[in-house]
Image 1: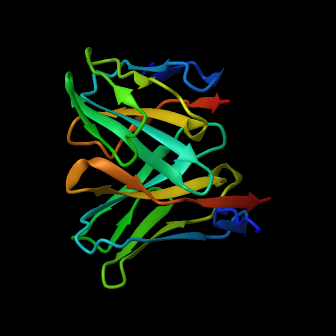
Image 2: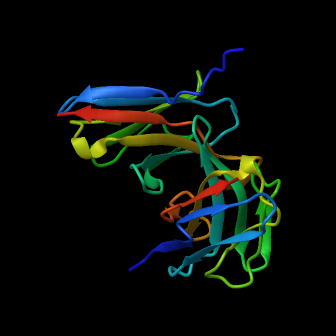
Length: 113
Length: 113
């Protein structure tokens, strides 16, 4: 039969536009979330984190929003630049341990000049 | 320069031939971890260590072993590699309690024939 590949979600934006990358989680008890950026050929790099007692946290050009009601978080990148092109992962501690991280499958962001 | 190093960066081997991928960090971090990254599956944690002689399983530990005899080193051992262990492997480290700000190595691409 036909095989179905697992495709990475993609987002393509124009340089200068704002980007929004989404992540859904399933464990309503999760209390901490992290966003990572992975450029081609490199390991992931920490961007920003947020704890469940917050709805919003801002960094330099990035903002993370957390909606606990629908178990959803998003990463917003302002004035997206070509250097922002990468795969973005959300991650959370899992298994009742703060030392065991579970990553989402990632979103590929492509910034067009 | 603060960094996490992995060796080798690329490796082709055959089924059943034991191999070790080394990981070393020069930041005096207590926490170290191994991940594998596969298309469509994102990053999955294999094993982690909170300090010397303290290791624990991540989400996909089957077929892997680790050891933490020294603080700076955290080798990943495949006693009998199989083709389903073909993957991109990342080592990471952080200070204990700040495991979210993990520093990732450059990755090791492994092909098991």
